Image (tube, helix red, strand yellow):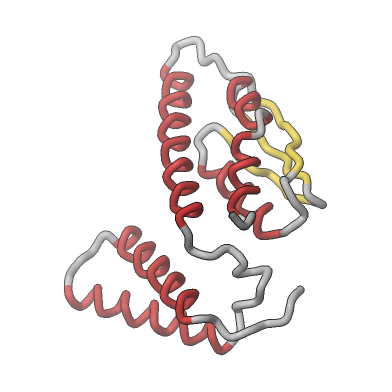
Length: 166
């Protein structure tokens, strides 16, 4: 593990924005009192995060960037495509599923890339990351098509591109 460091202003603002956005989306309530509680909880969380020296280089090596925004947009499109595919499978009277577990090798040995990959796989309907161990992810897929798409490596390549300097 790398040495903890104080967060930069950019990191603090980025994490605060993510927290606030997540809180707003998940709460669904937009009354002044509730918004005040949300703001207070985000501020308190940032104070605790700073005091715990959460920001070490490995944990927070992914910086807000155009690449990250592109990845999120691509992931949203993949989630939509997968949702439609899973809906077609589930609504089909013959239920054409072929569940299986596949092993996927992570693009690097950096833990944050493995976590991003595992979470991205789990967010995509029809796939679920069961385990990450020594750079290998065990993933349950609902269909053969889902397994083929995962093993094609596109998601792995996109996650690997997030940490590369351009």
